Length: 408
Image 1: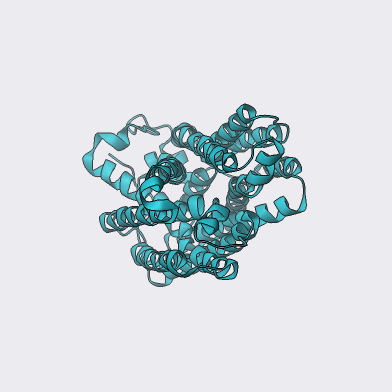
Image 2: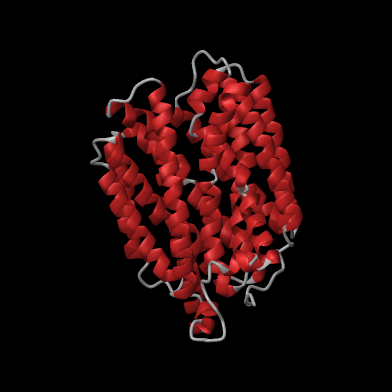
C-alpha cells in the first residue's frame, strides 16, 4: 500500500514539475514577444527597424531551440530525462537574468540564442518522462495538463510585461527558473528508461537513426509538420500582431501584449478542449483534423473581415482556441517513437516546430513585395496547413499505444 502511495506521489510530482517547467518555457517565449517593441525602442531602434530587428532576434531564439533540441534530445535518451530537466533550466535562467542587462543588439541576440538552447529541453524531457510514468488510459490527460499549465505562461508573460519594466520582466523570468530547480529535487527517473539504460544491444539517443530509415524519417517529419500551424499563428500572427493590424487597415491597432494575452487565453482553452476531445474520441488524429478546420476558418475570417481593433481582438481569441491543439501534438510526439528515441523526438520535434518560424518569417518577407503583407501570410498559411494535413494523414494513430517498446 505504501509503495503504491509513494509511486502515485512520485508520478504526481513529476507531472507538476514538468508542467511548471513548461510554464517557464512558454513564459520566456511570449515575454520577448510582449516586450519586443518597448525593449528595442529603449535601445534606440525606430520605425521599421523594430519589426526587422525583432524578427532577427526571434530567429536567433528559434535557432537556439534547434541547437538545444538536438543536444538535449540526445542527452535525454543517453543520460536520462532528469539530466535534461536540470541542465536546460539552469541554462535558460542564466540567459534571462543576463538579458535584463543587455545594451545593444549583439548582446540581446546572444541572450535570446542561449535562452533558446536552454528552453529546448524543457518540454520534450517532461513529456517523455510523463508519458512513461502514466498509464495508457491516463497519459493523454496528464500531457494535456502539462501543456495547458505551460501554455498559461503565454497569458502571464504579457501581464508581467505590462506591469513592470522590460528588464525587470526578464529578471522575473530567470528567477522563476532558478526557483523551479528546488522543486526538481526528488523527481524520479522513468522506469522504462532505467530498464534499458545499461543494455548494450540498444542504441539510445542516436539522432542520426531518425534519418537512416525512410519510414522512420517520414514519421519524424510528419510529427514535426503536424504542429506547424500552431507556430504560424503564434509566431507570425500573435508576435507581429501590431503590424498585421496595420496591414489590414485597422486605424487604432491593439498593442502586442493585449493581443498576445487574449490569443494565449484561447490557446489555453484549446489545449484543454482538443486534449479532452482526443481522450473522449480515443483518437489523436480526429483531434488534429478538428483543430486544422477550426484554425483555417478563423484565419480566413481575420484576413477577409477584420477591419476594426475590436473584431481583430476577438477573432484572435477564437483563432487561439483553434491553434491550441499543442497538447495533442506534444502527446503524439511522445507516443510515436520507442523508448530509446522517445526523449530525442519529444525534445526535438516541438523545438523544430518553433524553429520553423525562421523559414516562415523569411518566406513571408520574400513574398510581401509580390503579394502584400496579408497576401503573403495567406499564401504561407495555406502551405503550412496543407503540409500539416499530409502529416496527420501519414502518422499512425497512437492513442492506445503501449509506451514500453524500442526502435530497432
